[in-house]
Image (cartoon, rainbow, N blue to C red; front, side, top):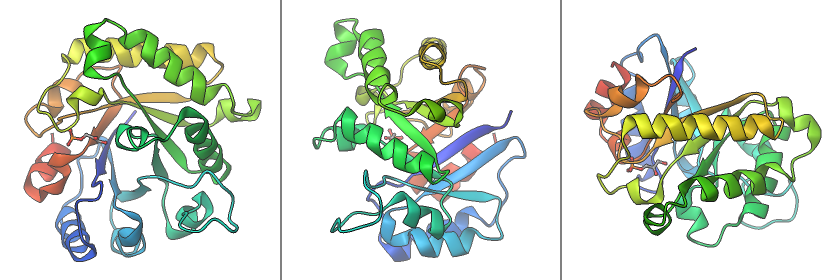
Length: 243
Ligand code: 13P
């Protein structure tokens, strides 16, 4: 199966910068065995969608509302993302959890995304303190249980992506060993399978660069990468896509 490489631009780019970067990215095709996804912020979503139309790149968003379309000022619904051309949506990133987003909301967002046939990219991961106390597995099991348990039974056959993103690895230049990462990704897949979710793939994110990406992609239990900083540099990201 193709490995997936997802660019999470976070809130780094103005619309003009997102346009220019998208044009640079799409000047070349990603390697044949890779699925490439760009996740701009909401403001750049429509224009990025038009620029990606004739390219091999797919579109994702960085979040969606926990609500259906209606009177929810400031929210962007999964239905609106779908109509814009998004295929994927990142949900529960640790940068959002740090600002108070909880598992209940994350689970509701997953429901909205799946109802619109978007593929959610659900972020999970332990903090440095939790890792020091050897609580990584307990923390991940709890995060999974809390977001999966409230989902309706018929969601179990929907494709879901979990992104294992240790909080301490994000933007720090620090990374877990590829083998250890693969074991954790396999554990996440097993936990989801035990909960009845049979179409789960697991990817890794945190300080991925064009230099270290290959070591992670070689692991069969790691189905792809979620890339922050290195996806803001056209040359580095294109090198990453041509591994
Ligand atoms: P960095 O690649 O900048 O560490 O960010 C990872 C991330 O948070 C992707 O969602």
